[in-house]
Length: 159
Image (cartoon, rainbow, N blue to C red; front, top):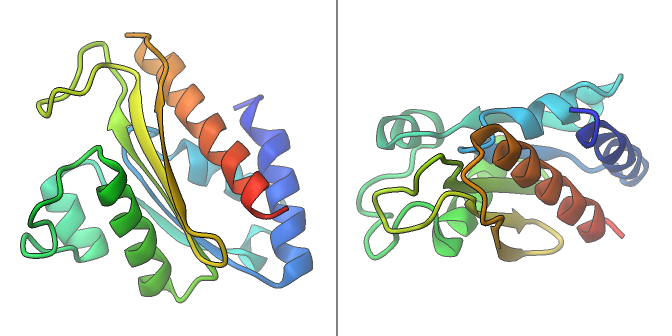
């Protein structure tokens, strides 16, 4: 969390100064992104909610994405991350949606992505996606790296 907290503090400052809010959907980071954003005092001014969407069941129950909406999209992909970011933003009525979905390790996922693969998306005033591959099978290190990259890119989007 040490590397995530300074980023979360800067994001919090910018969101509060702009009067904007954020909602988060994360998978392989397991809640680290939300935890970092919530660790900043006054988080209720900008953080509207989040979900760890780790399974198909969680996707349906927590963000309401149906199998029909998933037609032609696979998990741990940029299109899926974009759908999650848009959906979590819309469902929460937030200014920003941030989503992360990937494979932390120590092995890859059933879709053929290697350990250390994640896709991150932002939906709001700036909409974009990116993919990160660490090349590492270290699950915990990947979780931190994915969370850090998501927060770095969120901060850049708020510039």
